[in-house]
Image 1 (tube, rainbow, N blue to C red):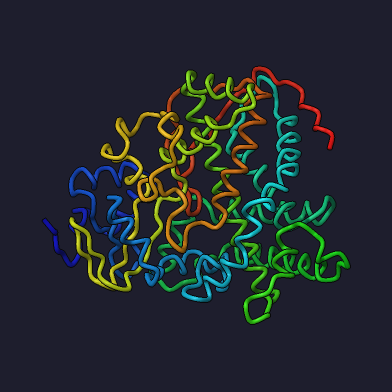
Image 2 (cartoon, rainbow, N blue to C red):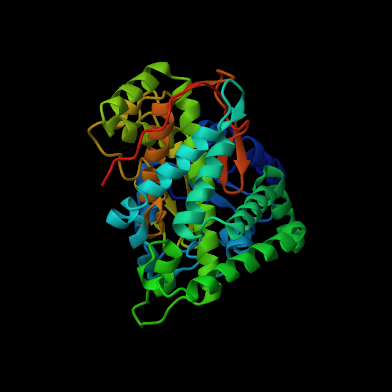
Length: 444
């Protein structure tokens, strides 16, 4: 039977209470509404002009993501454009978006992507060597340091020296200034009142822009630009179908996009994976044994299961270009709709005992396309998805083969917010009880 509706039922709370629930306890907020209302329900957040419908049934997710004409809900531009810039591939639509996606995708796949393995391994090795033995530290912060360094070296192409240190400091500070749950609330209320959402950090963002434009200018002067393998150089030498190129402003916007999309998200996914592994000794032991044997299938399955249970980005919305129609649901064109990713990932129909950590679910079989969506879907699926999983494999392999780690608190991490991500609230505090020396790199 088809359930036809203008909008699905909404929670009984006011927009303010819905916003607070979503900001501070997002998983509980979603789970409560699923239990009370069902697979589809609408919410209304402070600062948004209309409700957002959350769907979680794979059939509805498929209908949402396979319609290529669906656009972006305006909330994404409001929250991200001040940081990323208006030419960001995350914010463009239609052919403009597809043209940039085609240009930016190749470095994040295949042999080009695999050529960065040595860089990532070198960064992780140096990071592990800096960790204190026998003393508590939050591994989420250390994963942020790793992924930021990967971005600076592999994407920005910044060599060691004062410029690298300055960019590292500026970018770290901007992400901290804009990433907290309190900062996200300020942004929503600023939108409601028509104020500059980034007023308090505008000066620091200007400093970041100055540093990025200086880096772009320095790259343009390099005689070896065509032969360099950093992603900035590739973007500078790439051409659209009409032979045009990205100007400096657009290069800046795409660099900030890759920073936000590839740094914070991957670091957070790694922190959640450590939280899960260190609370499940059987699965951790099996993973270590497989890595000792030079196998990676269980590692890949572990990553898939961690991303299922703890998807980093909770929503990936669209504004419907035409009616969305499934056996269970009809929504009219113009509705703002998003897949509620964690709800999709925790359906018992797709994953028996859905809250259990079981990497073996993914051994020998790929995840179902519309029941496993940690990177979104359709033509707007995260273009760095393959690179993120590649980077996670290297980091987990290096850490778990060298370090004996334990969690300080054996309880599951509570969910917090950082920018657009759902992150471990306490930063996943760990202790290293033993550390083995790094392996010598293989000779070519």
